[in-house]
Image (cartoon, rainbow, N blue to C red; front, side, top):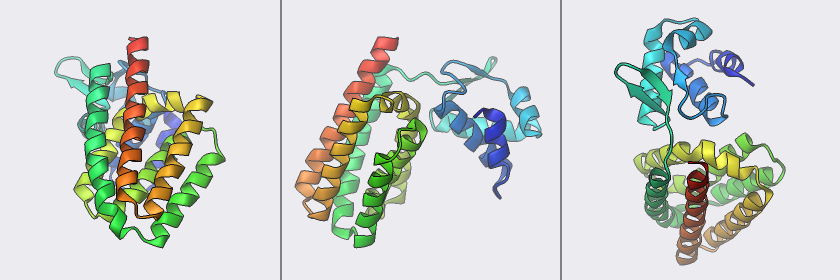
Length: 223
């Protein structure tokens, strides 16, 4: 799949043009179609989408707010590069916020929520596609957190996941990483079913901290 394919897919949706372009560019970055540090030429993107540069510029601003794109006054836009220090900070913030989310959510989790989370894990067991694994990973966590009824908190957490997503996809391609992650997901879900907040918090914190350590190590090796 390339940017033209992504553009064709999103332009079929009934949403504003800048949002659609942002969706396509975001997916292109997460899939590695656009590499870190790569320039994003507004005129070329506008031509591919058949639009003016104005909605492209708005889309790039959205991605800048998400941490995926860096805008330079005289050099245009480029795909952001995540440093090891930035990844460490992101994971520390994730740990604090997601622990709070699970604490608030567990007393309100319904049987439907827990069943949905279980189905997501079953789907995860059946695929090796890194992009789908990343999507299902977020859906699993979001399903457990939504009952906290903190939409702003969830939006912040989602953005933090997006920041690391393209690098985590590389790790997900490794079988041992995916097996360990799935085991931790099942343990977390079991704690939620038991309404055992203390255990859920411990498991979630270890889950995020371990993933963060591996991500930082990966970024240090490639720098």
